[in-house]
Length: 232
Image (tube, rainbow, N blue to C red; front, side, top):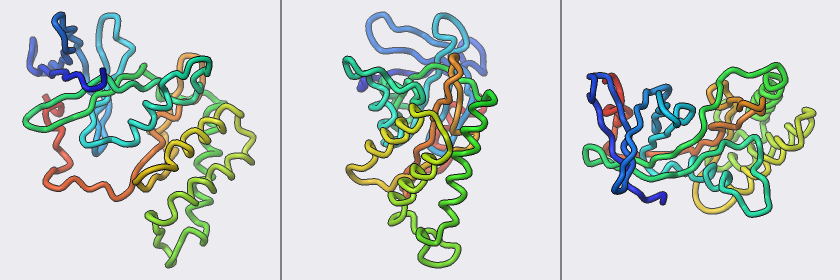
């Protein structure tokens, strides 16, 4: 199912309109609006109908961090999904203007955090700050060697989180992320800025987009490659 080819309509019925169209003999047309973007991804939220509380992520390239989160979100029979991992599913691909994009779907998560989750965010951000200032992860003053230090740095952040009286379920979510990024190529890092965290309708802190990969280079493509959903 993750290889199904979706399509995109723009300017219908209005100039600023964006619609996702599902594949198949009875395609579903979903009106969406852009609610966020990064260097390699655009976030679209459904604006009406039964999918109004659904968001779609359009990503350029392999988007390894999204694939990791989608794999962690897939349910294993008899094993409940961790409540702090986003319910992310890869649903297909888009081909627009000769460029290939991956398409993911998830529930809409609130960006505002309650008091308990703000405390958790502070603990995680403090751990990042402390570990980034640790001389163990620097070869020269002020120069962190991410290609070599990213794994030890991630593990040190996890150890720091252990001391912050965080929920066991959240520590388990971090363990799952570390285990999933311990194989294959890629230099991973964690980040816990406000844009990386969210909250679900049950009040659980969601590690929405806390994974990153360093040294991503996409030759021949500028940062505005996702222009087809920008400024319409």
